[in-house]
Image (cartoon, rainbow, N blue to C red):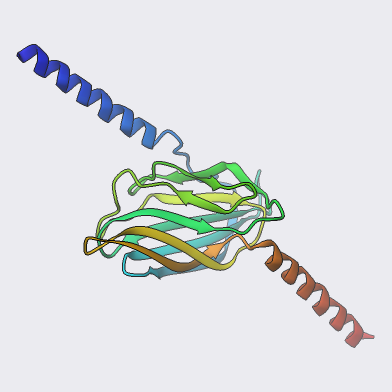
Length: 199
């Protein structure tokens, strides 16, 4: 009887070690190259579930010069955020540095945090190891991209008062290709108008 109990305890311990190890297998610190903040929004509401802090930085030196670092941190104000997704409409093969889609410690970790779709459709924090309960925060989720940010939408799934709930919130995300084209066209148009006035 005692031997059976010891075996069961050993199995539970090994399972717990495996789960903890798999949850942090991809853990990596944000590249520390010189950077400057170019966009930020704090405490953007995610419906009845929580808040998201969304900040974007532009690297000014090092291996990622002129690339953009996107960071997100979720905080629950209700019960149980289980899933987080950043929508991206990529039909022009936007460059996302897949090796650097990652997260840092200091909160509830996702089971994975990765690009989804080809072409890219979203970047998802797969179900968190445990839901992010009221007052708790997620790990810092981040990735590196070639493109400057625009205001977009992030979505969450969880439970609010025991009811399955889906909600969206404003955050900074990778621009969709049409936005990139419009931004480029707008910049060229502005340049041409300035040039005409100078003549």
